[in-house]
Each structure stands twice: as C-alpha cells, then as structure tokens.
Length: 224
Image (cartoon, rainbow, N blue to C red):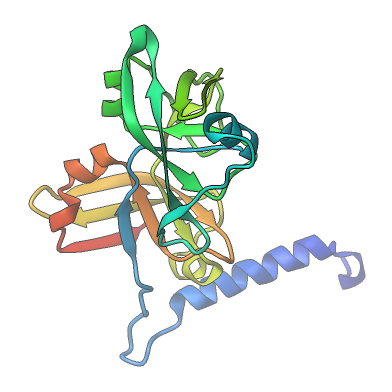
C-alpha cells in the first residue's frame, strides 16, 4: 500500500500512539519518569441540575451561587441545597448542588446513602441513566420528580493529555489506584476521563474513601 492511499485518520492514530509511548518513557532530570501530581478526593453525595429544574426548585431566573470552587477549574459546590425524597418518604436533607448547570439532572449517591433512601442504584458513568431509579427533589420554591437519574457514579480519574501519556492510557480506558494507609486498598478499573481542561484527580465516593481511610493515607498511586 502506498503512502498516498493511507487514510489520514490511520496516520494520526499511529502518530498519537507513538507519541504516547514515547512520552510515557521520557526520563526526568533525576533519571526516572517524572510522575505528575496525583490528587485523590472524596466526592460526597450531590446532584446536578438543568437550569429549568433549578428554577422549578428555587424560583424563576434563579442562578447558582458558588460557595466553594472545586479542584477542576470552572466547577463549584453551590450554596444551594435540596432535600432528596425516596420511597416511603425516606429523605436526606441538604443535598449539595454542584455547578454549573448541565443539560441533564442527575443525583450521585454512595451505596450507604441509597440504602438509607430505600433505593437500589446502579453503578454508572455520569450521564448514563439506564435502569436507574428516580426520586423527588424538594427546594424552597417547589418540588420536582426525576423519573430516573439516581446513580452511584463509578470511581474515575480526570486527567489531561500529558497525564494520559504518562500512564499510557486514553479516554475510556481503565486504570487501578493503590491507597496506602492504615486500611490499604487497591481500587480496580477506574474509568479514565481525558480532557485538555482537566487536572489529574481521582474521585471516590464516601464509602470508598472511608473504606481505605483516605484522610490518613500516606501514599496514593495509579498503575495499570
């Protein structure tokens, strides 16, 4: 096959794979690969809302008020909270809303939270609401019903292209996390979410963070 007949996408893929392998092997000044700064955070229960649902809960024209900026640039925990209501009127108050608003409303719970609400939630990546239960959300100006969208967000790692090159992964690949602590744990098959705007950060939920005693961890590392 001549070079003239090689599809451009094939060439781009081959170059990308070669660069990824090369960058992953690049030595630092001290002769070893320079590991990027890894941050592991617990993502407590929260919800994401569309602007329409936000206004139904808080009033026409309402906008989220940032209370705390998160590690990923442009994202924040809002001052606004709602009450989530499950079957048989089981509820959890003060469910934090994360901003900015999205194109879909979604609730993310740990299994312990879901059990308390009487919900059987699936483990899903964000936006995948297949076979997921719904709930009611109560705000100061009204209540809405979500027919679906209550999930346990699967553990995942945000990373930029340079981080992905270092670990030799692409968006959608899987990688493992080792947490060294009084209760050392290896979390398998974290979803890699690669985006040019992302900083290297693992998200665990509260159940996972408690299981590995993350607050007293002495070392965290990603490996394949």
